[in-house]
Length: 101
Image 1 (cartoon, rainbow, N blue to C red):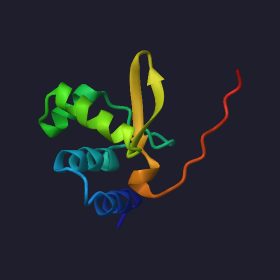
Image 2: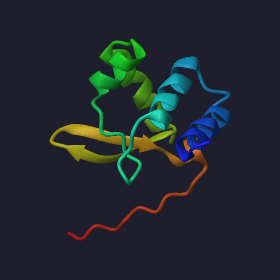
Image 3: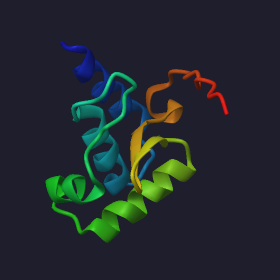
């Protein structure tokens, strides 16, 4: 079993009490190709299309998950936010790098 599969399985187990749409979105993030920092660098429109959802539904569900710590914003490319699985999803504590001013 690959490390990506293990992450997806962990997320699946940790999300038992979430709504089906929330679980589905988190599974998409768990299985999507990631940057070294865990970020999924695909637009919301592309991810929504992958699920067969409207962009507004995707945005609403993602916003709920960010608010509860299941996803976290890690970067912005121009005005587009980039997200990764949060600590709630994986159970792993993440260290936030300090940025100089």
